[in-house]
Length: 395
Image (cartoon, rainbow, N blue to C red):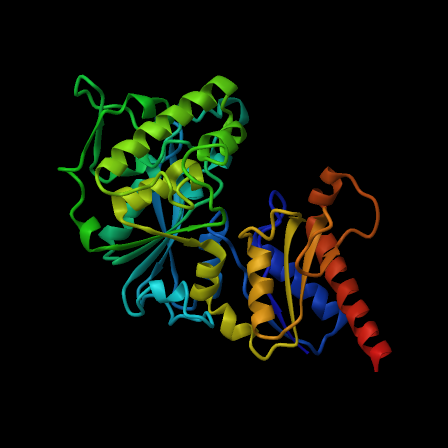
């Protein structure tokens, strides 16, 4: 049996790399002779850089000290440098791997490393105060390294600033009605009257940017960045409405420059960073899992396999809408290979792919998360034995 293991992270418990190792251990317990190929996956959020470094042979891990999401705080962020560029497109239809030219030095940046939700203590979460400025500094690090292509993974953000912070780090200025420069935070969005691009970094013109995300939310509206994601990041109901007005204001100013972000799918990702990347860097917004799959050559690994195992902490109705396990299972389906999603919780009834709960019986959430690795090893072993038994019964 040739088994490809490509899980996402089990959020709060295991990284995608740790989950892949645990699943591989489970397979080995059930079938010591199995050929195992591990390829951790991500969808643009936390773990994207780690998945690239683990799965792309030429990738180098780089580090930078950048501004965190809160003013006056520095964080140490890692990013992936691909000196030989992206591998050739691996998707069967050529997308979105074809968006990256082979041979061009490429950076993969994870905005959560610089501007992430987990970097802000719970009592200080406030999208009026947080900024994507550190994400812009990571982009500058990539440009300084000579990267001509920059992939920005969007997910797990602490911000709703429309990419203002990122753009400020890249040389843009945002001013109020009196011409005063504004702090690049969510609280400034509604005060912006002018966007000055005269000081922008000239390397932005020649670089190619891709924004990788697992959501297609618009910038504003009932499904927009403020109303959907603002409360998750600490916004009060009053702040949500102010952020909505601010994002609408920024969107109109950007649209006046000839870039319509108000109707752009994915513009609301990462608190409107999708809109900012499209407007200030000319980025294309693409499916994060499909892009990571293309970068890691997942399609080629799956072809000819007997089974694909993927997974995440909670397999629910949201999984089908751009989450990593659905993307992996979709690639397996294209290749005619059966796939199973392993999860700590399987909720809902309308799932596109077979799922297997790794819990052997009732358990509290805290217990399941504390014992996630052991549960994943044992659950994977049970699944493989069960599949082998079913295979024997069919024969």
